[in-house]
Length: 200
Image (cartoon, rainbow, N blue to C red):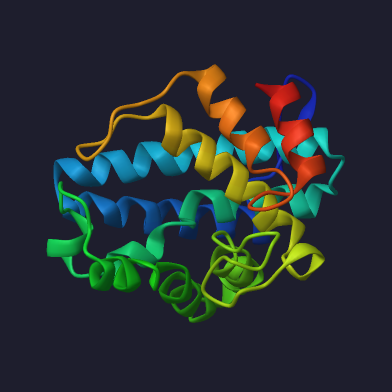
């Protein structure tokens, strides 16, 4: 353990290993070239927003760590998707969209293969589930969805809305908040949305 400003800082242990693995996986997006940077930036923002929201919701230190790490690698399953689909700038066909929807399961499969990341595998697999059961890949609903996944789902949706991509223009913060409010109780957890709006 090192010390800085009188505070103990972990220099070893499970949390450090988990972060090392997650950052290594995140950098795999660099294989996609310039487009990979968008995935990295988005993932870091989702991780940060999810971290802030977890703290506001009073999660334990361990759960906050899991949320932050799962936020970093929530999209890692995209690396298993055909690049012609993943990097397509036009709208996806229905068949292509179905293939894209495999990324949470692919991410879970990868994380489950790494002992240090097994704890966050199911969080990643659930980040596109919806409160009303209309999400994917398993159609989970309400409390059947891990709270960590409900947190990441909101942070991920918000960042996607306010960010610019080759296939879409960003919308304003206020418009994104309005969309989250509109989708409370159907796509998103109502209480988590309320807390999220307060931390923005």
